[in-house]
Image (cartoon, rainbow, N blue to C red; front, side):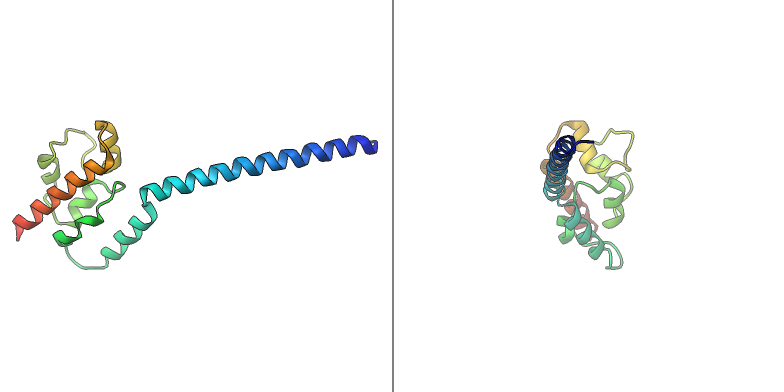
Length: 131
């Protein structure tokens, strides 16, 4: 193979590697932003540290509720009756209680923030009436 062809192939290989690195960097940036937007990692850490407490969580911990949690998770966290949130929020999804708040919000075309506020209010209402 001539030296000219080798240089040309080397140039193509270098350009291909640069393009691949740019694409990989873009994918990583988008992924990190998405995780940051949902605060999934910090939410999970808060949830795990909250679960070190024995028994149901008090109503003051309703700020630990995150969009990745299922209704079942929330029911267990706050010792709510299985169908409390279903009744209180008028949930008609057949996947209840095994659907995450995010998925449920998507199915209703409701903002996650709005749904989280509604669920937190319902949990607060339930836990204050239980005491």
